[in-house]
Length: 216
Image (cartoon, rainbow, N blue to C red; front, side, top):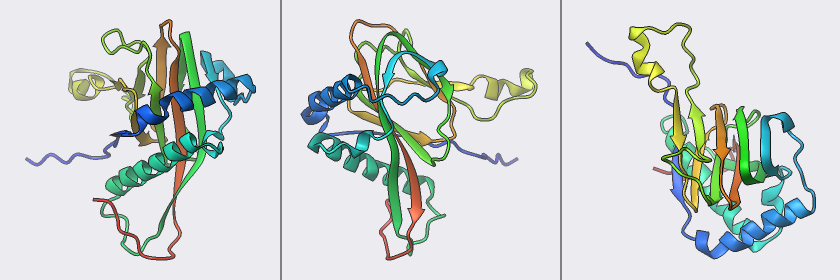
């Protein structure tokens, strides 16, 4: 007998070495966006108790934002190159477009219902300040859901029904990258401190202009 695994779902996590250097400034920028009332007004019924900025965070002209955006773009390339190993040719010129980016400031009782990120190939969540997030109580964690749903459940489906979701506990300075079609949510957050994350959607294009060295 030979087992044939199919349809993997790839997630990647990275840790930013410059997190401590830029954390305070990035949090300040998030607050400034809220004070300016730069609000997304997207899927307002799917979230409560949090501020969501407009989708142009990475376009803010500030050294901290520019440094974070550059690093996220590099991580996106590394993740996508790994997932597409064997599918990208060495003649491709890969362009990473961070076409949507926004921040969340989540307060006590805040949550975001299950959703996906359409019109993008890869998405990411950067944990700027996890505050009172907790793995044991699942406080404020991001939950990712299996994209294939069972039509019927019995003893023969135990291997899938036991793995319908995974709870991801980020850490300050951590970036998690995932396919944009993967359903996920932000579980209810309880805490006196504000939880800060920055999310980014990207598109990856083949400009086909020059050779590029692919990540390994």
